[in-house]
Length: 192
Ligand SMILES: Cc1cc2nc3c(=O)[nH]c(=O)nc-3n(C[C@H](O)[C@H](O)[C@H](O)COP(=O)(O)O)c2cc1C
Image (cartoon, rainbow, N blue to C red; front, side, top):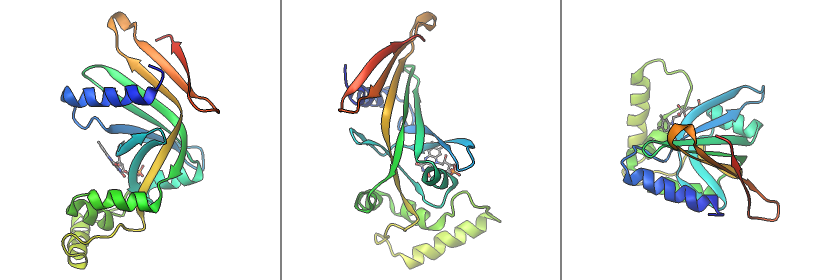
C-alpha cells in the first residue's frame, strides 16, 4: 500500500468493527510559545488527503499554542488489534464555512455547550456552568444555534505518517511515510 491515508481509514474502520470505543479519539501534542509541550485527547472529525481535522475552543490553551506554533503531532492507538498511527505536520485553521457545516451537524446540547464552556478557564462552581447552559438555551431556541466565533477547527496537514502494527515477540511492523514536495509519499520500514 503506497497511500498511508487508505491504510489509516481501513485501520480506523477495523478498530470500529472490533468494538474499540471512540476509535476516532487521538492524542494531540502541541508546543506553546515558551516551548512547553502539552498533550490531550481530541476527536478526529474528518480525514482526507488535505489532513486530519478536529474542533475545539479557540480561546483554549491548545488553540493558543497552535496559533503561536502551528505544528502538531497526533497519535492513535487501537487495541484490539494492536495498532498505532503517528502523524506529524503543520496546522492550519479550518475555513469558516467548513466549521459552520460541521457545527450544524452537532446535537443541540453540544452546540449549547460550545457557547457555554470557557474551556480550561477556572470554574468556581458547577452551578456557574449550569447557569450558562440554561441562559444559552433561552437565548438559542431549539434547533437554531449559530457557531460561536470562539469555536472552530484545526487541520493537521501531515508531513509524516507512521503505521505501527503489533507482532509477536515485539517484532512489530513499522512503516514511516514522508510527504514528498512533488506530492505522494516516500515509504520506509523502521526497526521496531
Ligand atoms: C476522548 C476524549 C475526546 C476529547 N475530544 C475533544 C475535542 O474533540 N475537542 C476538545 O476541545 N476537547 C476534547 N477533549 C477534552 C480535551 O482532552 C481537553 O481536556 C480540553 O480540550 C482542554 O485542553 P487544553 O486546555 O489543552 O486546550 C476530549 C477528551 C477526551 C478524553
